[in-house]
Image 1 (spheres, rainbow, N blue to C red):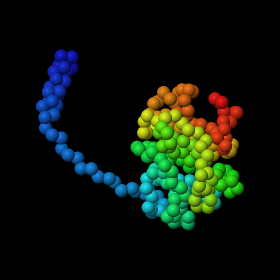
Image 2: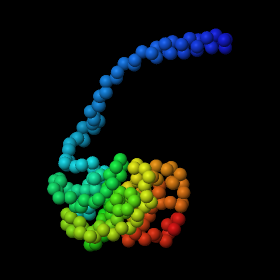
Image 3: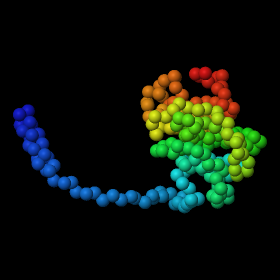
Image 4: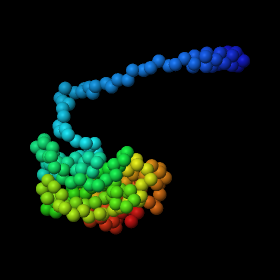
Length: 211
């Protein structure tokens, strides 16, 4: 097709579209499809209810299930039952993606009863914090919080990170969000946007690549 004719066709189509654009588009019905199990060996059922904004869960070495809630409560499930009394309730900023976000148990929990949490602290400027607590059965030992790391003040309410896990090397690994500033992930001048590696007491391992 000659170039001039092609231009005519394009202009005609454009004019048709512009002419039609004055009409209101039809409203689309919004519906949600039910989850479909593709494997008959699996069943979909509610394990425990009554939670308020659960963010993560992890098993204690003795089999109890600990579930963190965005509002700062750490809940305990024993034998399939959610205990009425939370393990602890922290004062957190839970705006947007902030709140109580990560929990991990010390590899020696059976003897030292330590667990580690990552949450958005309201102490001073709003910031994320890594702390260690001591358990006494299904509740925390009052006043046992040991702050291991306070991260920089937050400007954004999203991109907080929060995963906390122990590695096979016995070190504590913590993901820290980049505060919605992508360049933080590439900068060695800030802990934001990093996967950090700690000793269980909060000190920095001497074999860290950027010690």
